[in-house]
Picture (cartoon, rainbow, N blue to C red):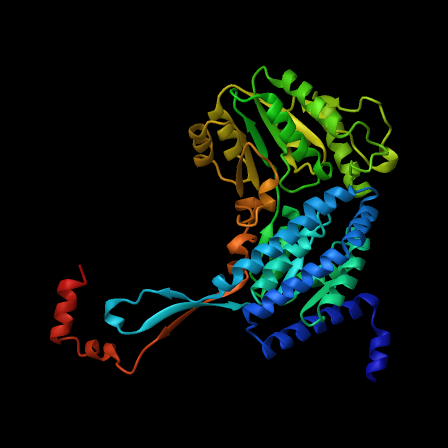
Length: 482
């Protein structure tokens, strides 16, 4: 059977999966031909990426808008594109310094040897991107990969088909496929991608899918960075002005209609403060979004599956006695455009579905507390979140909460914005993920920290070789082995 016959006999998925393996081999061979690009070459690659992002910015934003049904163009440009451009600027400025070998100490019996750490590229990095921020969460890891001197393959979510087509075209214009490649498609393609023998893999998505990806990666001992989300709590101290809290939480919860992995997921308020907070939150929401159904600034839920999931959480909470406060003063019907009005819940109990699963929508459950320590105990009894937000201008009290809890990030009087801070690492802990990127950690996470030791012609260890009855051995015993 000739090769043409073999190709024709393959199913479409078989052919595409074979193409994935060929693509990976192409990238690995290209990397081995030139395994250590200079700082200048890496900065040039980042500059090419920046040019293509700026050139295609309108097409990116419109494609994401198409995938969502309605996704705010301004949110895409500010929250995704601008953040990527700032990351490129940051990495271009610092990577020359990060690439320099790090001198290390050599023990006395090994003198006069020298030791240092070299930072090598890993090779080929696989990037699996979710649908909620498809530009930021594909380009962000790519920036780290290119700065560290790697090649990269990017798997785009099947829910981001329009965006994936534009990204594939744009990056093909900037880079050869042997350096950067985009993979579109779902189902078997997604599964096959996670089984490829990358040198490292970055996955952003749900905890359940993250477990599957990690299991697949383990077959080839591929190390992984997992950014998994979870339920990020917000805690408000009695001393703080609720107007400040409501404004900041409204921005964080309603940006991208709550479809953000670090969005505040549920809120703890001091007992008796809920009614005031609801009034303040309503004012903020209505000020930002005077209408919803035909408002291009207010984003739709990505698809019917996610929309129905959120409605199911609300139905379950309602059946179990929660009070649902929908902020929809004009009583607009938004089902046809898959929009959900800002919604607050009171009378919430931990066993409700909305408190068991990451919400990923413009819905904020509220619970009241009497003692801060009770909230700390509640948070610590649950999987460690990607972020924990605490509202209080007293630093000592904030330190108290921070020191007694674990989370990927601790935000004091702010939500979401840490993701856009170039010099901060981003990632989770425990159930919310492992590994970091952004900041220097992004460069070092995607580099191999190779130890190097060099001995001169003088070989000092010969003086302590057996037999172990020489004067030097007695000296070691008296001076070093104590």
